[in-house]
Image (cartoon, rainbow over the protein chains, first blue to last red):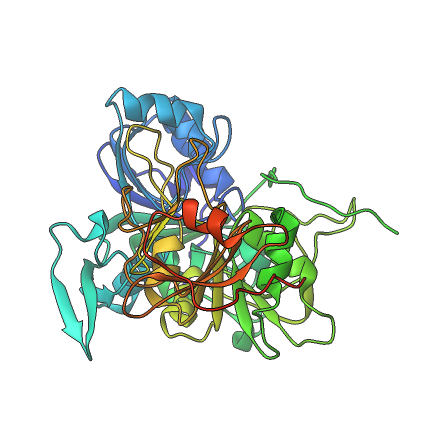
Length: 232
Length: 218
């Protein structure tokens, strides 16, 4: 059960034009930076990317947008990106905006083997257009389908060679639910250890969900909104 | 008239001991500064944290620890982190007692619009639609009128909706309002120096004014 690959280039070797990818992260936090760099280098195009945000102009998925590699973004919030805005307004880029909880739960459903979920988010809004509405116990819910992604690409803090993963702080965000949801899941980690070195009781993502793992390098971990207080 | 800090101070009085609270971006974020220290209140950040603390000291920022507004933050003793699906699970399952968020418009039947202006670049709804669809108690913090001087408390929202029949209470620079279950805004308190007439003139939706309206105490 050794899932280790040499690095990002090998991990993404069979990602091809037109595929659907999930990319973990929230804002700049918990992004699979190594795989994004490898995808930019490989130059695959016409991608559909499922990710909560679309990066900024020079970081995250913004790097792929700049190279015109993305055909469609499925996200909940896409601000702070001028190139994204330009491509959207010119019609080069399709965008499907969906509520953040719906996005997370559609990933979760895929990882749990459930075809769909019911959520009240978006009832009575334009998000509900064309969707089945079901009433349970007097409240309306939208039926939302599980995602179907060719690859899920996630970033974890620690992982072992069997693909077991542990995330750190709020860099966890979408990573665990996306890790469960890809047909093939790639995990890049800051620390790669041998089986037995991680406490089984502390593992967030069991290795069964992970197909390829490698130790990432040169993490920039950019901060989007640096807010501090002064020492008194 | 209340300033932003004043609105935040007044909303803080709605928070009860033992509450789990989700604070939105903008004025709602300021509410955290006015929660009495004697109170046991846990702040939820929907990117996956319970027990959000203040901003870090300079030099102690952790890029792996941010809030839903992507700001660097800290964790308090007893914090818990979790994934995004669980985060919205606890919101959907109504474990979070109070949600405070901003709005562009609120209608007299409690509809809220706060994510999209037609013709302008749309950034997305983030977690707002999930929060308003599920929260047991939603308080809106906003300015009473928009930049063009038009009321934001309306008979019907004109902007695309974020959620329907969900807002329970509104605090603006002019006053505090309940959204009645049968429809209509009920004036509860007026801001210092603001007359009932000024509030009536600034409110386009149905406004109920009963008896003497006390001044907001903050």
